[in-house]
Image (cartoon, rainbow, N blue to C red; front, side, top):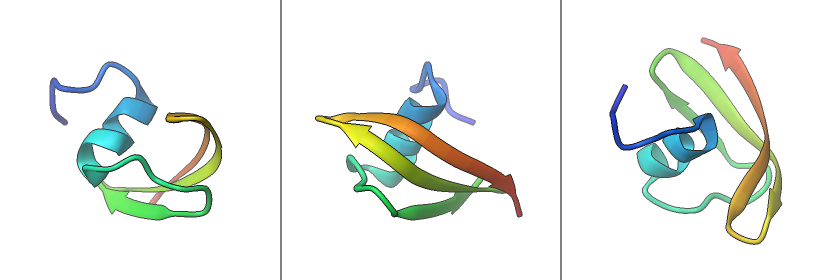
Length: 51
């Protein structure tokens, strides 16, 4: 992936080019990322599954 992100949540925000809402799903780098919880502008819980 990219060197812009230091965390998995940061990777999701970087790839999505937005701060996602709870329930949003993104597919990239061979994985499915689903935002499970968020506090303010931080993703606090993700569900990650391989495609």
